[in-house]
Image (cartoon, rainbow, N blue to C red; front, side, top):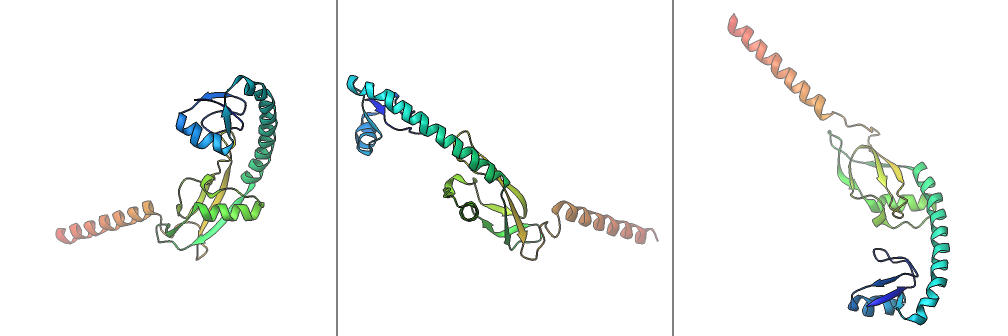
Amino acid sequence: MKVLLKQDIQNIGLAGEVHKVADGYGRNFLLPQGLAVVASPGMMKQAVVWRKKAEARREEMRAEYEALSKKIEEVSLTFTARAGETGKLYGSITTTQIADDLNELLGTDIDRRKVGIEPLRQLGEHKVVVRLSGDFQPELTVMIENEAGEMEPAIELSSYEEVVVEEMVDESEEETDEADE
């Protein structure tokens, strides 16, 4: 089925364009929702008007997203959570928590599904992507601190391993010294 799009539809096309879609998709979703009309010669004349309106709307959205991107890149959110000695959180900081704080701070309504990819489970500083559109994906900084106020883990795993190895070497040297005597 050939349809003329009345609005921009992600993964299909832009308003005013003619696209071939599955019959069921066109009949059951696009046409009843008012997102498209059946492509006919009479409707093709209206396509020019729809294209102009859609271009103006896209330009407006682009300006809006550009301003919002600049604001988001300047944001730094701080969360506190309980963490183990290695810096791994007992729970996690979810994308919903990040989106709620971001919306509260900026006064926006960004969907939680567009913020980040997965929950944060480690202390420290993280960069989280906010997917506004295909062209605009600003990053905000999220700091996760231990409830005790420490940002870094109490014992870094690599230094802990070095201490254990050094102690084992010292013990083995003592044993060889005792055996020599």
